[in-house]
Image 1 (spheres, rainbow, N blue to C red):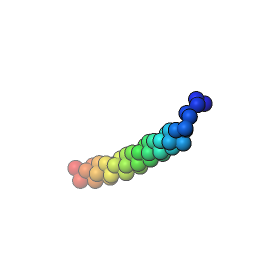
Image 2 (cartoon, rainbow, N blue to C red):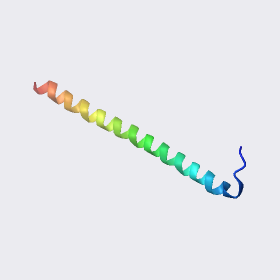
Image 3 (cartoon, rainbow, N blue to C red):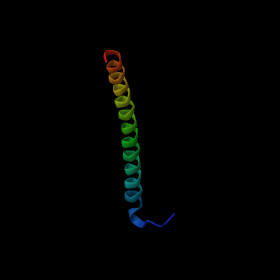
Length: 51
């Protein structure tokens, strides 16, 4: 690990916060994708029944 000097806490905190935010964005994106896919499948099923 490189020597970060007197700013080690700040640098590591920034990396930690960034990692948490990236993971959160990925999880929200996956959840939204699943929700939208389920809604699309429901619309397609209704369309096939009526058409």
